[in-house]
Image (cartoon, rainbow over all chains, first blue to last red; front, side):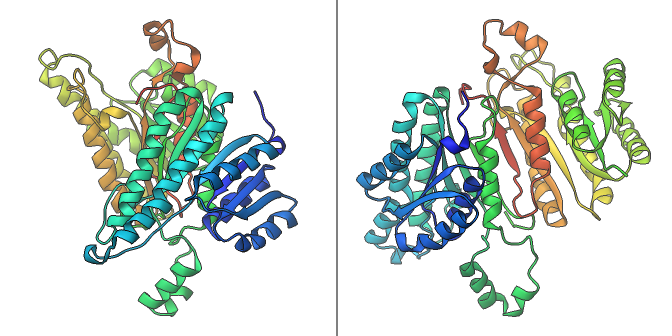
Length: 249
Length: 231
């Protein structure tokens, strides 16, 4: 059964400035109707403008993925516009605190944002896709999902949890023809925040002489998702890790 | 001049598919395996491919073949170590010499190949892909004559990857968690549907894909399996 991109939608939960936006653009370019959500809906306008200027289609709104009813409504809107072929969960919560400074509140909030929201998104995507035994659900992961580094008790426990959700879902849904995958990004992603950090730690000249392949462009992540999306059902990947060639790992 | 790909373990399944995929991708392909007849047939079928019959478990023969490949073929840009020595059965029945022989093919050959490859690849970069399966990650009963060597192979590839990555040489380990669609598996599983099996061409496509990832987004461990596989 073939579904043309023009007749299908792709939903991104956590369509931020960098990775989320790049994923949105990649799939819009391929002809899909993109449904983009992030907590601050106003921040989506530049993405909408960019995609529409290129002739792509996008519906965008504020979304609080910690609220199950909001996620359900968001995905229902996408599905109503065109059958959902892909849902990407792309919300992070990268914070670092020494253990004694990791408050109950921080632990719960990080878990809610990076793990619980992912679980809700996955479940509600599955609910839509299972009846037609078709579709893909991808989760953006991090090495913190495999390894608890110093100061990452809150973040790593949430990412470990998200990975568990993805794994459990994959084992259950793959036989029902729904491709669940977990993409681990082991990289400094090329964002203003990361560049600032480099300038602070290594001096302002560091940015002038920066190796072009040291940071990971958001587009590389979008391309990795695109490749996973196009895998044949006889050769699916659940977990893939990507890192710049010079990354210490 | 076309870049050269060297592929070991060129049998009729995955190996042949790798040869075809790399040739289609613009490489000249040097094919290493023991079965001369099969290699010659492939050399006739695939443009710009040539046969180098050898036992990769024999370091002297391996080195001779590698040097011959480089001399004949152009800049060495890609290697796929797909040769494998296997054993299945109760370890009380599997002779110790079998485990040692498998270690030579699965681990030592990779060690020799990688050491040989570095001077060829360090200037312009390149890729070394190693094919494996879940025996590289766990030791199931009846796999004691095989799994330890695949686990060692994976760790060896990991050590090499961490060292060579910053030098622009992409080392990756492809876990093929599947029954591969070849005549003997079809005989072994006569009642299974087509999509129970993984296609050699799918494996080759993934190996080629990983070998050509952009430098800002390399994978080391990559896995593929059919949707219905229990894992």
